[in-house]
Amino acid sequence: MAVRLKKIIELVFNIIFPPQCVNCKKKIETGNSINSAICKDCFSKMEIANCFYCPLCSRRLYEPKKSCHQETKFILAAATFYENNIIQNLIQALKYNNLKSAAKPLAEILKTYTEKINLLSLISAENFIVIPIPLYPKKQRRRGFNQITLIYKNLEQIISEKLPKIQENILLRVKNISSQTECANYDEREKNIKDSFIVKNPEIIKNKNVLLIDDVFTSGATLNEAVNVLKNSGAKKIIGLVIART
Ligand SMILES: [Zn+2]
Ligand SMILES: [Zn+2]
Image: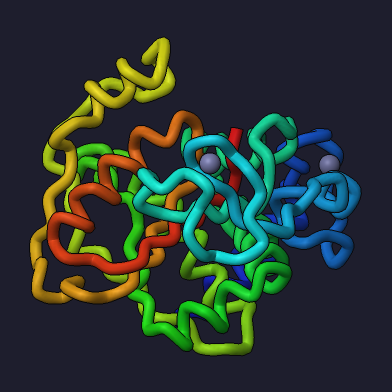
């Protein structure tokens, strides 16, 4: 009943204040869009990738096997490209303007991408554990949610197969750092993020495969640090899945 009432209030609200597309700012007609965050036209302009990548040199990999650089400890899966303004607007609306409805089209992008690369059948066949890159607790309280967890939960609702439940209590962020985007280069980012994560329950990930998820892959310093911590706790194969890469 409460859910139904919430839906009705939302519907009435949308009629009085029609939602705007986060990209082109056009009013979104009800029933004519992916959802209330982005219009169909803008949504269709996002190019979705069809391969994995080497996290070091960005070479395309068509199988999630060993990457071309032996020293990398994970394979990168990136659904789309951050250069595209539309994806930037969607992710920023979700993270900084608290527009939760933006998580839905981002989940649609993940759905299309994971279907193209057959990722979901792989993670269920090989018993992957799904872990989000955590936010510092104070930051998460201020935002009210972890954006990638919210996107993953939206993905669970739109796909037919059952996804592994997201595990939010394994990898924890214990250091509040200044924003990675303010760091000039990889070395600075690596220093900034160092010792940011701990694994709370290493016995859960020992000898397990991990799907580590995050919103944006820029220099890779954040994912690398998290991957190192997980590997030190005994994780086996790790795939880093992100919405967009630079
Ligand atoms: Zn639009
Ligand atoms: Zn490479």
